[in-house]
Image (cartoon, rainbow, N blue to C red; front, side):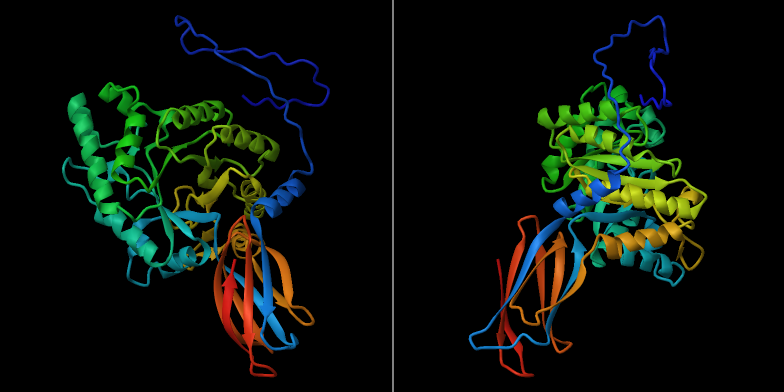
Length: 443
């Protein structure tokens, strides 16, 4: 639990209330952690960003003949980020070939590099009648997204919260349910093999045990991971749950579940953390504490469903700035996906970052665009005038180096910068106004 006390408090009494007094409850573990209110949290976060999200880049000029560096510049333009910036999308809107949703599609392709289908790959919505699964809707959307250079998460293979599995399962025996579960995995992976980067395996497992109850297998979620991994070893498999950072209710339980899976031989890659904030007033110190606790699972964290419920778009923009700065600065977090962005295709209108038929960004949408295109992305121009080498630090990911002479591009080179850094040696030929690049050595 999280207790916010006022200045001058000297004593706090904690009691535990149980649902059923006739049941003997055993308390395995408890602790008390004081969370400091750090007014400098954002300065420290930005320092971490510079340390962990950037790599060193050295660009040198070389020539077999004496040359002047006057007029030689290089533009470093990031084209892809190692950190994932993404959104949930509506499959039908992405695959629509009319002009009706072109503004929506353009916003997706221009402002995100990752996507997840919000509903189109969920079992209940795909297979409303036993034996008749609609693969086309979700898979077509995945193919369209990939054709536009996006990476895609699979959400979700199973969802064990009551009411989120096909209704027709309720009339089957445990053996028949297991058979149908295997058919679900086999059929789904047969249609998506090689297309998806991730799968959420059993969505919100801390909040629902439908498959544990109906199959009688207490470790059925672990079995799901094994089935999927055996069929597609290269896809990364995730737990995914809510009320783990925006609430105290499941933070510790989620950490424990992740550790048990990681050290219990389950082929799990990461922890999906839903982040549905119900207000823009977010305590960043508490949020970091909960992130730190989940990271103790030893698994990478992906923010899979970020939303901020706020009627004031300026306040929402400010909260988005804070939350994204903290997430981007946390060493365990590898990516953030919004849970939708447009008021024409989102469950809760107050979460929207863009509105109207033209998908016009509001203040929060403008903030996202600033973060994605400017603050967390490299686009810099350097002059070699009098120099033969330039040292800088750039955000991790793919970059284009545009070597220019007197403002004209004479060579373009694509490089990838990771934590280990990169050295690019540009070999020049010619002199005067007839410079050209013979080749670039990358180390």
